[in-house]
Image 1 (cartoon, chains in turn red, purple):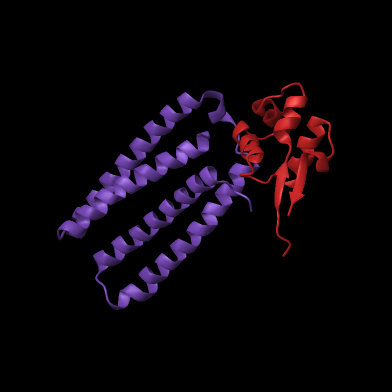
Image 2 (tube, helix red, strand yellow):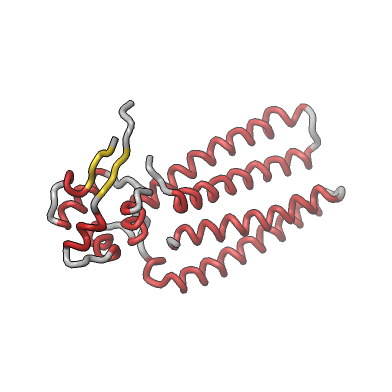
Length: 70
Length: 138
């Protein structure tokens, strides 16, 4: 099995997107503020669908938001 | 702390205290089946009352968050906890239904069945709490 973990630039990209709050982002993609916080902290890996939604809301590609770190 | 995590803490605490008291009393002295049934009824009613009041207080304090539907992380944590608790319950029920009838009396079997249910629920809420605290990646 390939070892690694998903990292993300969510916090930075939220800041660059007009200092969007976790609650606002969560509301736009249909998850709670706590789930956005958990994703940012690497405590939860979102579903592919949620990941695409996050990228779409932030106006970025999936790879710009989420990375695979070995 | 997430609203659903607070609810899990409440359910876990109430479960441990309520049935901790019940099993301590049952183990402490010999009782008739009727006395145990009445004791169990009292504990179950007390548990329900505390859960209802506690849930109302938590919901009032959480405000809008309490009305939000479970999202994908909540559902993933719920599935994980239920799956783990299912195996705990399965093992408990095998012990109660298959092993104990050969060696134990009825009151012990009844209480062992109740204990299996309580342990499975404690495991379920425990997994929910740990998953919210430590994270869920799976």
